[in-house]
Every structure is written in C-alpha cells, then in structure tokens.
Image 1 (tube, rainbow, N blue to C red):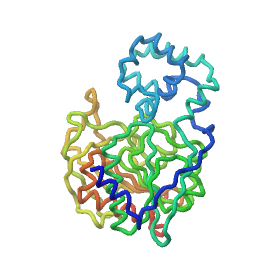
Image 2 (image 1 turned 135 degrees about the vertical axis):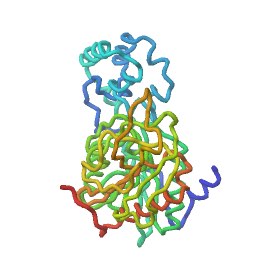
Image 3 (image 1 turned 120 degrees about the horizontal axis):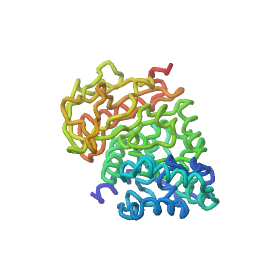
Image 4 (image 1 turned 90 degrees about the vertical axis):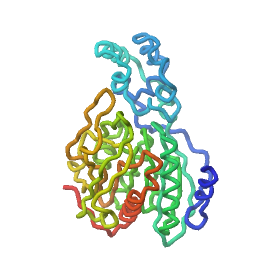
Length: 372
C-alpha cells in the first residue's frame, strides 16, 4: 500500500510538488486565544493550562489520567480539540453539580500569556508554494487535522482523489498547512477539498480568507469527517457553509449496510442510479441542511439500518440528508457524509458522486440555488 500511495502521489503531470514553506511567524490570531475559561472552553485548552488542569484534578481526581492519549492528549490530532468541557463531562459521567463547581472555579482563572501561546500552537501560518499548470481545473486538497484523524479514511480519500485528478485532467495539490488558506493562495484554485477535516484548524485571518473566497465564487467540497465533530467553535462553518451540525453515528454496529436514495431532479444526479446500497458509518445531524437552503442530492433510508448510537442515542432524523449542495455567496459547496470506510473510495457510485460533485463545484458557470 505504501508503494502504491507513493506512485499515485508522484503523478508529475497533474499533481504539483509542494515546496517546503518558509519559516512563518508564530500564530497570534487563533480563534480561542482570549476565550475565558468555562465549561464551553475546548477541553484541550483546559488540559494545556496547569492551573485549569489542577481544577479538574481536584474536582474529579484521576478521571482524566485514565483516558487514552487520543482522548486527553494535548498534541493534535486529539479528541480533546473537538470537545468542550461540557461535552466531555457527559462522556466522563461528571455530575451537573460537580461540573457547575468546576466551571465556577475555571471562570475565576486569568487567561495568561502562556495560555494564549499554548492555545495558538496548534494553528500555523506556513504558506506553501505551489506550481500549477494552466488550462486545467485547479484543486487544493486540504488535510490539516487537529481533532480526530482517521488515518485509513484520509489516506484512501487522498489516493482516490489523486487518481481521479489524473483520470479527469485536473491539477491537484495536497497540503496540511492552514497557512495555505490565504487570499493570494486561494485565488490560484477553483475549489478547496476538505479531506475528513476534524477540529478547528484556521486562524481568524484564515477563516476570513475562506469566507471571502466562497463569497467571490470559489468552490468547497467537504468529505465525511469534515462535518463530524461533536462540537464546533466556528458557527459560520457549521451553520452556513456545511449547513448541519453532527449528532452521532450508529454504534450497534458502527458500520452497516443501508439504502441510499438519489434525488434525480438534482443537477448532480445524472451519473447516479436512482438508488443503491452500501456499507459505511452513517452520520445523523442535529440540524437539517434544507433549513440552510441546501439542495439535497442523497437521502438515507433509515428503515434499512439501525440508527442507534452510543448509550442507545436515537439518531433518527426522518428526512435524512446524506449529500447536498448549496450556494455560499457566489460560491458553490458540496458535502457528502459518505466516506469513513476506506472501501467506499473505490465503490463505483461513490466515485461517480465525487467526480460529478467536484466537476460541478469548480464550474463557476454552474447553476446554483441562491440562499434566500
């Protein structure tokens, strides 16, 4: 597999090499830099602060020491970056009165200069240099992940997309640097693809750059985990760009076969059958993207699998969107919740879906239903 990935990653004609970025200045405009400590603080920022961590250890001795490193680690990728203390309290069975006591003590703590530096360390200002051939759709495959990094799915998606670029004649480059999300770099690309991105990854200036890029006509493609965090610290991303907030996925079992129905009136439905069945990890959402103006392409038939999550969480949505498009300013976005299992990236209908979606997203002349 490693040899195969190396070969695909070295497609010289269509995929540019990435130069090592120059040493960048430390990040000072990270989104949560000045956020007061509270139950809404990202768990990672509490664990990074000796004073805040001491509050936790006093209230619930040993509770956090018993967690696996991927849940309570302070070096990304880590689940601690996609949980607030309030959300983590539910997983850790911290009682409401204990949480209230913890929060009262946390809010009394100052946010020190050292806290601010530690909070910004997981962001970057590294601007990679790209060489892009002219005359082809240009795609930026973005892979900076601070939260949950499912290595098999990220790698399978990258391999499939690079092969797709070769087949379709697209120019595609790959980066894990948030510094690539800046006005000058984004102007070089027709669309940005977020490959299973988890965790807050952009500084305030990078956030503005992505928002302006979409507003002025750029394209965005989000894949599976890019809408799968239990907590978001950027409302625009969750509510406007994606248009839905993650609720959960089945756990009994996690991966199930289900029926997918296609909206044949959707402009991206041409290459797809009216329905198909496949096995994957099925996301449910707290909010429906239709309320954000999305044009739903795929829906999930909840009668064909068991939509029960952890601790018997009811994940039924009734109307259950799985993939959709929308307009964001003059730009076009596409999101699909398919893609946890590596096998999905060689599944014919899923490959056809991604090819059609990316082709539509980069086409600035494509019709797109505007938000009201």
